[in-house]
Image (cartoon, rainbow, N blue to C red):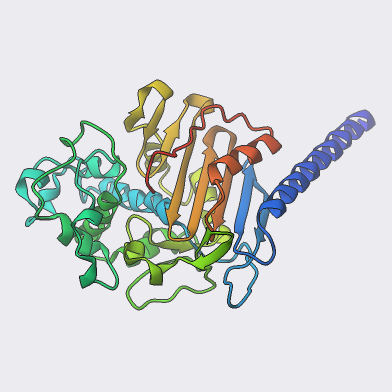
Length: 367
């Protein structure tokens, strides 16, 4: 018995020493990139289902100089899409809609040549062919641009990039339309629906969605890094910053970890929905085994399957990387540009001895 106890203690001490070395290496890496007097980042690493690292670097606001912590709220950009997709799939599970519904059911004044061919599933997987709203807006008429304005911008357009279902093209427009479908079906505003069905059950009490006239507590501001200096690049500087379904969520590392843990343990969320969302639904590049699920990029398969999603909005850059079979995740929220977060995740994976050969960079996509 004494031998087994000593063996167990030896293994435990060795594991703790390894964990300290990994954390110290990660801390050194992050400190070398994000400095105390500049916009920075918050990060968390989950390994074997446990949070092994969580820390903030840099400052959230160049005016207040307030340090970034794990409770700082960031705009998470296109990582919002995983929440929008979950909302749609939840409504489907309640038989309130079908993914094969044509969108003309929800937008009767949409051009019938387009809306009669495009389904909710096409919107979810970025293969609807619907034109990007950015090209159909008179920017002089707006100070802020919301999801309903996205609909108004594209609903009369009778052309598409390609027939629905025939090709892949990343579409923020599609996810703005999905948020409006959620409102149509549920009777709630999109922020109310997300709060009622996700934030409140998971106790993500400090997460929010940008709304007209609303404010975000404990928030970071986004900054562009240009010519060796930072300039603010936030909602006040970008007309299209304020759309909700494609990129409107603000959350912190602390709150977002509750979402990650719920995904991993399958208790607080519908595990069937999560599995469906994180499974390949439309092949982006069959030669490299990259697909889009519902709100997630998916690469690899079986025990080597990874799911991930980067985001970009104004001066914010974000990414989540997961290997479900290992209950391993890396989350980075940053309020500055100029750092390649996909490269940074790969460096972190090396530190934690994670094989990420299936991890493909998404440089050619727009987030």
